[in-house]
Length: 478
Image (cartoon, rainbow, N blue to C red; front, side, top):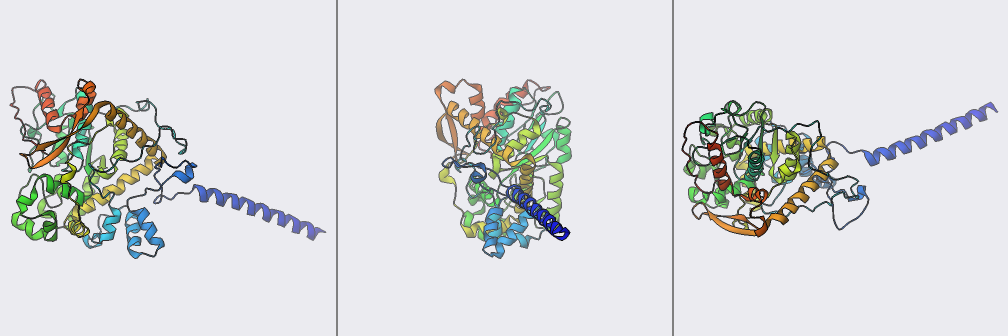
């Protein structure tokens, strides 16, 4: 009898253990999301399903594609996945970055940032996501608005759009701007010095958002204490195509983009300027202060990327602009209205060149330093998004999209094409609705960068000592 009781007791305990194990396993299977594989929610307006079914994976760039290839036993996909999981070690050899598939997987977008279609709008308060979209304009009462900020304006990365955000923020608050005395550059190709900016009685500046090559110590001297440093990067082949077209580099190098990409070292060595305002050799690293003579030194590039990581509070990624702006808002304790934007300084679509696979591969080899830079900070951005919270980010992106669209519907009647740079390029400009022509919010968000610069120069003239001549800048800086 005692044996039977013991057997029954053991059976009952085993049954309880199995049931508990199944419950635990079920909960963990449904809830577990690894750090690498965490998803970013995006809505599909045509599908109304439960939250767990509606969430679409948008992982670290390349992970989703790499996972698909991994299932198929694709060794190249395995390497791409490994690169993403590794948070981008900057001591990777340039040869490890040479694989076309890896490069294509890690890039975040194929289309020109100024031409791609808007992401689907997630309805405000979309119940299918189980996330409430932000209501209202303010931050937490414990978050104090920060005002000092420096944008290291890189060429043809979408930086003019970010510049407009900063211009508007400082303009409505009557903040001080570091502005170029002549033209739109502050010293390039020479790295920034405080003397390159229009002098003000305050001696320091709240905002710097014009082209200047990075010099950390000199920039810190010019800015108010505690100013945040930000910059923006773009997938290197697309950035280079935009720059090559905008500045008519085919005339300088006597070669089409495709021809240049096929023999960049020979063509650049023959025609490349020794001290350019914007470099055709790793142009983003050059804007960020790295010397041209070090561009072929992999160790020096790795060290410089590490240095930049220690110097900048936030590096935005053009292909993930909305997410980047949400992180900027969070960093600065700003509101949604502070980060609304319309794309600025965009080329007409007819000037955007399609890059062939071969040209892209060649450019990635030539721009290997910029690709390392982009790869590193793209991974950093997605780590920040995960820390911010993917569902929270989805709701905030939806709110930003809603506000952008509402503002555009209120302000904009259409677009017009404008010839710039002595007729060498064509830019799209916004046309305001008649009822919006006296609306300062609409005017500020659609000002061409050059026009807004002149307005701010006139405003800063009232704040500066003495009489410093303001020279009208040349048209068409990017």
